[in-house]
Image 1 (cartoon, helix red, strand yellow):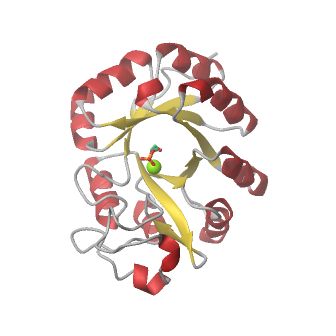
Image 2 (image 1 turned 30 degrees about the horizontal axis):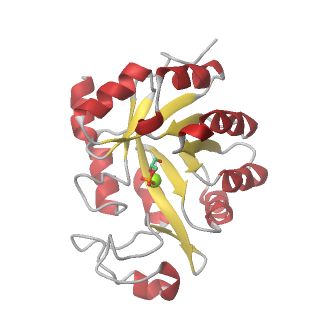
Image 3 (image 1 turned 90 degrees about the horizontal axis):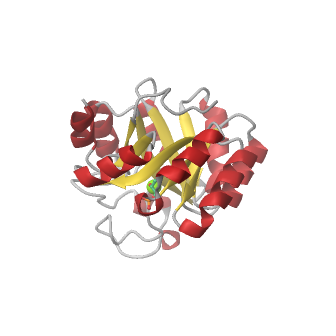
Length: 233
Ligand code: G3P
Ligand code: MG
């Protein structure tokens, strides 16, 4: 038996709501929740032992600062403008915002983030989260530290698709999340046959959504979630 068709198509706010608000900010997460996303995705790195919500290892692209994360003290980093006066959030602030409203997909981007996320979640108490990464050994660390946390395996290269399914099975993952560029019906069928879901990234245009649906994906990461939700209605 496969899981396909048991759930509605899941629209996931990508980097908060990256097409509409500054990415990976509280403003963006709030926006995705407001639009009705059942899940919101953010990226995390570790700095001075704290989990911070940012995609790149440098601040240049998304803030008014310059340089790699490691050159910053936490308090300096928090003074940067991540867009429209937003600060780079702490993971805990996003957990707080999502509590009782949506599932939070925490993507591990920085070294040490696997251990740090598990530690934060242990002290946080019940939280509706899923942990994802392209770094599969980091997901293994998560699974070793926590037997029950939901895990998603990210994959961006076609030659790694089958390995991603094997890895996901080994980790008892809930989903395998491939780039739209390598998504196919055959891949979705293989994942579904293993009772896992497929969430593809990143839907930015209508044709992307059509492709995701035609292949049989169970959901997508969207920069403009409202447009996708509207299209699905
Ligand atoms: O989790 C899907 C997507 O976020 C992966 O790519 O680069 O946007 O983190 P990226
Ligand atoms: Mg991401």
